[in-house]
Amino acid sequence: MADFFQCLAEKGLPVRGSASGIPLLDWDKADPAKVKEAEAACEGRRPAAPLDPALLAQSQALTACMRAGGFANFPDPDPRTGDHALEGLGLKESPEAYEAMKKCSGRS
Figure 1 (cartoon, rainbow, N blue to C red):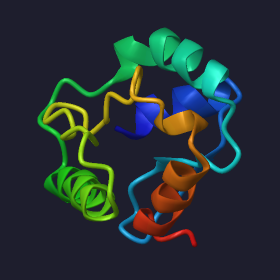
Figure 2 (spheres, helix red, strand yellow):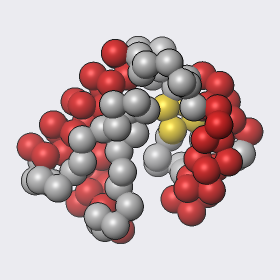
Figure 3 (cartoon, rainbow, N blue to C red):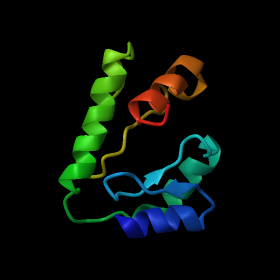
C-alpha cells in the first residue's frame, strides 16, 4: 500500500499520514485531473495482497457517513483497494459533497 501512495506522491499528488498510520490522498490539495492520471500511472504499484482491514473499515465508515449525510448514491469501497468510484456522480463539483467529504474524513 505504501508503495502505491509513494508513487502518487512522486507524480505530484499531496499524500498525508492518518491517525491509523495509513497514507491518504489529501483531497483538500489534490487536483482532480491529476489524480486520475497519477492513479493510472501507479496502478501497477497497487498491492496485490488483500487490503489492510483497517483501511477497508475506514473506507466503509466514509461511505456510511456520506450516505447518512444525504448522499445516498455514495458508492461502497472497492474491497481490493478501498477506493471509491466517484466518477460520474457529480460529487467533485458539489460544494455540499466537498464539505461532507471533509467532515466524514475527519478534516473539518
